[in-house]
Image 1 (cartoon, rainbow, N blue to C red):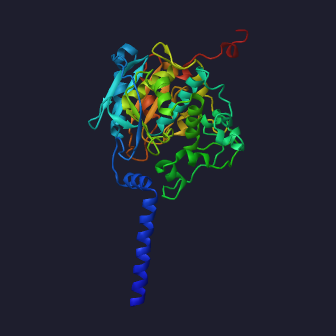
Image 2: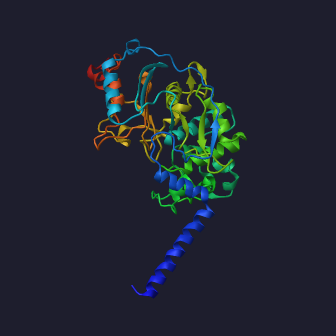
Image 3: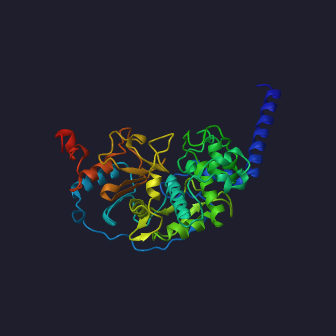
Length: 400
């Protein structure tokens, strides 16, 4: 290489270093998070979820623990479910029925109290808090256009997007590209310091209610609407309206910057066992151990399928086929809190069973997302498979 070529290469190298340094100095918090996320190896609480805002809890006792037999469940079926969960690298498996805990298994030194990343479980709290706000008449109705609450969209056609559209991931807003490159929209939504600005900047590329996309802007705008409707910070309202009232312990929301906006789409840090309380609240249709937290009917409304995707309701997955399942749910009314990470929370309303499995790391491509709930349901002595249920006698014997 000639001296001139070497000099040019050195100059280009110096410019690249200066460019990288300028980019870091322009957005240090973004780059600290971005680099930490790619270098950090953890199955618990990512250290780069900083800063954080506390969601104050009440730290009430957990549900009573009873033997499986008292709740008509086969211990062998529970053991088989636990063996499968353990083989998939899980941290915990907790099974509750009729507000009683019938099984707990923990791995890798974890316990009920272990603080873990809720991942996109976080979204369902925004849906439940919306129901509470409607119950308290802070919000008029679920089909209220967000332009009524979010003034930035009042004169924008995106203001016609309704709260129900946001709940069902059907806003019609363009989702960011899946790339985690630092210049991409997905990285800016996760690591950026202005997540509300990013959400409010998403263009409308579909028809609200008629297009479906799993993306951070929808729950983020829903949380913003809740703040505007209640006049409180999202963490504060979540605490007083929901989290404290189900007796959960303190949790933390990840903020985009100091005193900034809280992520409503992901990343809540909470005791892993407290999510079984959320399961009990869902099974009770807003009633938690005899106390009405949300007006009856709201959870049923959350289970109404999105027009654009019948496998999903309000951050709830209604079909086994929408996940990595190899078979359907044996109990037809089974549904799950939607999650893009390793956590699972399955609910079976007809049997009042909640099943929580955290930090699953599937071992191989044959992972079956329906196997754990199906094993447990199959071991319920009072479960009657659909094919064995009595049919309409009049169709068999005329006149009856």
